[in-house]
Length: 88
Image (cartoon, rainbow, N blue to C red; front, side, top):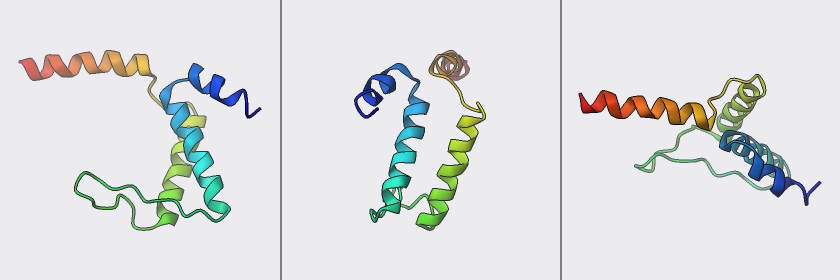
């Protein structure tokens, strides 16, 4: 399975890769590695605690499992409208 994972990751959308990465990070945190809390561009933490961050990541993974995500193709189509809105 470990040998197949990189091949499978190349075949799926980026949001699935993000979800897998999150799951792996959460799992590794359970074995003693403390996950880093991400920050915004000004260096402010996006979460108040590791627990809050992990709960949010769990929620996001659940949403992906339910099919609530935007594919890369959908995002490309949507982004075309952004330029049109700003050109007017």
